[in-house]
Amino acid sequence: MRSCPIVMLVALVCCAILPAQVAPQQQPTPNAFDAQTASHLLLDLSEALQGHSQKQFLALFDLDKMKEGTLFRQQINSFFAQTESIRVHLNLSETSVDGDKASIAVDAEMEAQPSNGGAPSRRKDQLNFAVAKAGTRWKFVDLQPRSFFSLP
Image (cartoon, rainbow, N blue to C red; front, side):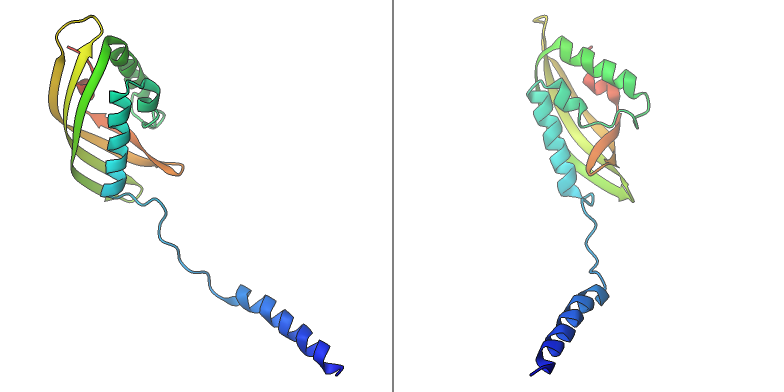
């Protein structure tokens, strides 16, 4: 009966060692960019515009990585200050991925009501967004044409 505790001890040691020897399973790439991710970003952009939330809108952009990000921030500040309400329709037309960067082409229509009570400004254009990973999230790092978000 003395061998029983020894056998149990050996069995416990083996159980503790074996899991460490098993190769770790490969996990799928977390937060890979796809059409669903693009749609989610566009929905967030649309909600920010229609909710007239400048802070929420700008949070979708990585202004530090964006060429002339400070100028874009000023443009958006001015755009939101000059508009009372915004209605927008964004239709995802194309996505492409190149490693940790992606691009999105969007057919966009927008109606912005100026805060001065003038006639609404209507725009229709194709927007091209560059997207890059920022921490655990994807953010816009460029937008063309930027003039889409300005009143005449």
